[in-house]
Image (cartoon, rainbow over the protein chains, first blue to last red):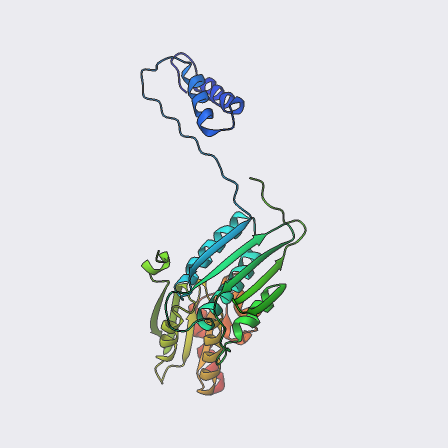
Length: 188
Length: 128
């Protein structure tokens, strides 16, 4: 960018124009920028070009993990990042993370016997109007023992819809949190 | 692939005694994988302690089993004429959870552990 005999701003401006006028494909763009920035001539110093393209995040999140207690922190971490990137506010992040954690904990505790190996999956979808989370396992829930209902109660307090369906293939908990009209998908 | 959370402890639980009050400070996250550590700390209470302060200031996450444990502690300690105080900042995950589950407001103390210990001593002095 920097050339003898001209101020740095001129080189930066040249770089900016080259990027804006360049092709979409990253490889071709790099070639074009190098051609313009180096002026087609050899330069006495090494030149390096680092190009980063922001990949728009999918509005869907898919996580499949062993149905073990230790997986819950991983689910929360992945979910938290997805929610933040999707522009969820602190109230939404709190409600969705706590409720999804409870749904996953139920899959871990109630769905399977002690035999290791089974998994649980979480699918998150967000739209302007709502965030939905589906947590599925392939086991049959045992009835909660003791105060096991506290998790379900919490989900119902925090979410706008909680639906538990038990089928032959397993159990799915569907959670929906409505978003205020102002909440929009962030542009990529 | 092992979950990355395995490599470090999810929560650190520190237990001390200040002015005959047992302090349990929890930093990190509490869920079904480690709530038993907190349960053990909660029930390792000296019989002559005036009460327990659970400091959740550094607790980034907790779940319904943790809420259940705090409810149980509140009831059990009350039966034994010992007091419970939970310290958690406004807007924090523990505070939001305890509010949404209608945790007894008299056991929630805002500013810090010192205020919580003073609050327990005051309550027990009034009761005598």
